[in-house]
Length: 363
Image 1 (tube, rainbow, N blue to C red):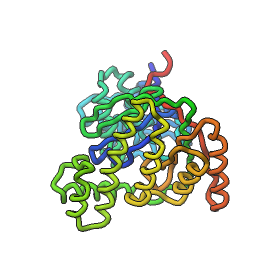
Image 2: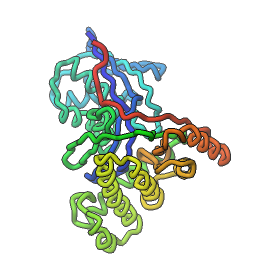
Image 3: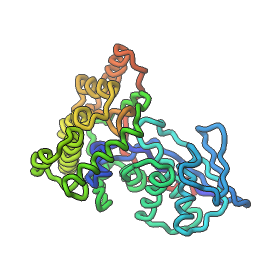
Image 4: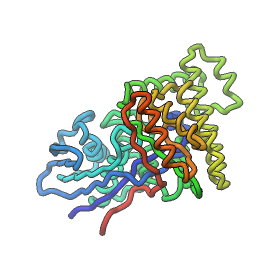
């Protein structure tokens, strides 16, 4: 017997690096995703195959250990986390097929982990509910793979609703589907195709910096600072780096909340300036952009986008622009021309449609 589940990648409309600060984020799932087909075996081995990889990986469940398995670790970590929770995991064959661009900041890893977790849950009739699946997938990435993600990507992959963004409270893990009215507008995604530069270490540095700032301010997380608290909080910090991080997180949380208000009111066009302000914060305060990201965002606005910003962890990946439908083709061409002038690698682009979260494929 086998089952297949597909989990999507995601675009984060607004709210970068707020998740591990227990703040707010507003991602939406995209149509690109990962499909995991899982079947039981007659032996006790775990075999992971991928259409995108040349060689399968075979591991005995008892030999699973954190930081092992390479690309297959995102699948093997699901079995490891289940075993750590005291559940029996039989021999399994896990077959993967993903069309989320790797390294693009569109959460290909969460799509993989969530597709495997939901398929294994279904196949083995584990009865894990939404909260348990979220905990399982976060443990897989955090504790087995060793990626310090904050949980937003897994929420988006598991709980997204078609035609909606997912308003995430990263403290309570409560979510709300917020309709995105895109009449006359499109979300254009520019994949810079730039190699991620020091992404893992820099991500960790910023997370640790935010945690250090919260300790210095005597609060649980930067989520606990509101805009009225910002000036006094900044005055209490000695390091400019920490002040920049705090300013980014506090103002970003406020922009997320304002974006949600505008979407609830059906005024999607009005969120454009918030996207552009978010890009400036990530460039100047959090300092996670690179020239390819900056050029793409600036060019989209010059070409008529109502707003544009990088999406994802930074140091590479994608830029999104809220673009009038009739300008989408010209805006993409403008970015291509700007990249050619700058000597950058040619970008890729596509229009993102808010999609559903993880779902079973086939009978």
